[in-house]
Amino acid sequence: MPVTKIFVANRGEIAVRIIRAARELGIATVQAVSAADRDMLAARLADEVVEIGPAHARKSYLDMDAVLRGAIESGADAIHPGYGFLSENAAFAEKVEQAGLVFIGPKAETIRAMGDKATARAMAAAAGVPTVPGSEGRVDGVEAALAVAETIGYPVMIKASAGGGGRGIRVAQDAGELATLIPQASAEALAAFGDGGLYLERFVGTARHVEVQILGDGTRAIHTYERECSLQRRRQKVWEEAPAACLTPEVREALCASAVRLAESVGYRGAGTLEYLYDAATGEFFFIEMNTRIQVEHPVSEMITGIDLVREMIRIAAGNPLAYSQADVRLKGHAIEVRINAEDAAKNFLPAPGTITGLRVPGGMGVRFDSMLYPGYSVPPFYDSLLGKLIVWDETRAGAIARLSRALGELEVSGLPTTTPLHKALAADAEVQAGAFHTRWLESWLETHPIDNPAS
Amino acid sequence: MAVKTIQAPIPGTFYRKPAPDQPAYKADGDTVAVGETVGLIEVMKSFTPIVAEEAGRIVKFYVENEDPVMAGEPLYDLEA
Image 1: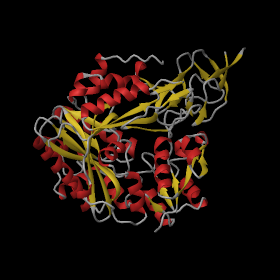
Image 2: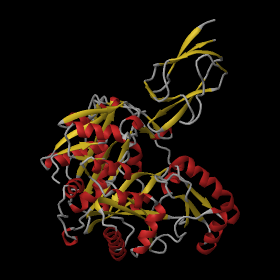
Image 3: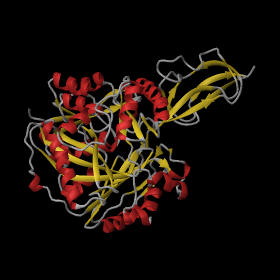
Image 4: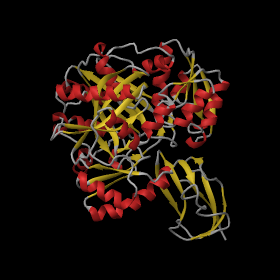
């Protein structure tokens, strides 16, 4: 089905990103906005703007009927959900297709299967992809959990089947703790996700977060290499890079091949990410979950391969086969992305909405700034704090870090505090430069490296 | 009896209930003690409790549950 007009059902920098890709393909765009977002950059760049509801996301961007109504009334023939909001909602994908529109993403059944982590694990295992030693699907009750933990060994991680974004996770050191935590975790999962289902995994203490970007057309899939996202605060990614410096070429090849195997085994359509834990001590990697959408950190994969992932998502949704074979995908150089958030790193990352009174965007060789900012824009308090992403590329990792430092020095956002000082400190840190970190490194580093924020 | 208008200290989404399926913290006409929670304001996904700095009776709320508020916008009238 041809796509001639895309309804952008998201906001912020990803909405801008989608509009840019659509325009390059000669496709018109309609930007959905809440009442609080009429002035956002994407609304200014799109061909048309449709207000879908009030500021509260549940009454606008998360309201399936309001989004669909806006899309149909505007005459769009496709919906791009971006990330977050309705991007991984199988019921929404189904409604879009039932309305005769193209959902720019995977099939509803793929979203549903991968959205249940226990099912995703089982499908990975069936495709021969290593998973963290753990339960076969859900564990029902304390007795079953204790038996599973006995075979995989302590400490074990308790996870909610329906969880995400790091929510619903507990670590039990021994059988006593497990027996206490299981009923609690189940009750919490039920309250938070409407599903009390749990599963268990071996707890890998100094894991690195490595994820593989894939693209599929429903039959064939390719990878565009992996990203490392180990620098996290409260399980939110702060700094992402590609490729992962911790992998040998042999491990990289095995890891990426496993991701393609899983994507092809589920007939994956569109852009997706397979998340893995990498244990640098043993060289083992384990599949954890799949994200069935474009991700915030996708630009680093674009920078090392030259492939426009959002454009390719749209082409595939319009019914075209993948334009690339694996042999076309060449890894070149190193890319780093840092998230520029409206937060005061000096005040425990206090969120800080406000008006952009001045803006200087860095440029030059190998520098890209994907953002929602313009001078005079009022960042609303109703959504997340991501203002934009600074992405750099160079031939080597050391070169990319030097370029990042240079670009951060040029970046000026006035009117509110941003996380720029944190990134400057990270880029100057010897351990970051050596690539010597893991998923819990940043939080302990922050305890001994207070961030000074001159803008606050 | 003096009536004063209490304003939102920060911008965001005002919640009058601790959770969607629970009753409101306070209704029009309720009394409130110092330190009692009157509502929550969500700013960029982080929640700040709005607590009473003075005791008294809430005459009326200006905002409903999940209404957007700007800093300085009236939240409720308090009779102290």
